[in-house]
View 1 (cartoon, one colour):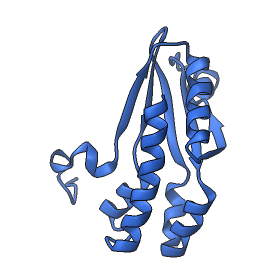
View 2 (tube, rainbow, N blue to C red):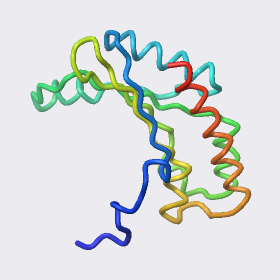
View 3 (cartoon, one colour):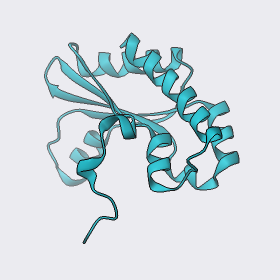
View 4 (cartoon, rainbow, N blue to C red):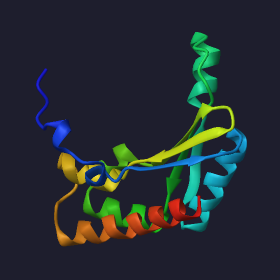
Length: 145
């Protein structure tokens, strides 16, 4: 299969990649990430542990891995006014995985930027305002991790 775009030509900034390493336990990192994203203006309406699910269902023996589904209702409302298809990418996920005991990675990519790259959202000034506003919130959260 040939991809319609060349992934080697897309930079992490193009899709809003953020990554931080925390020197703490897994549960502590989850709680800390939840707190800083909440303080930055996100709620966390959905969260789950894929590692627990997979370890239970298919005996996967996965290391701790957790997903916080972050959402700012005002931004989500603005986004859906622009394109209903964005709901397929909701919520904005923040992933926390254990790289090794006492060392956690907190990872996020911008669904707003990804949607624009994929043509789900327009490449216009209105959308750029949404990208900028959500990006500022994510930047604030990462600055406080």
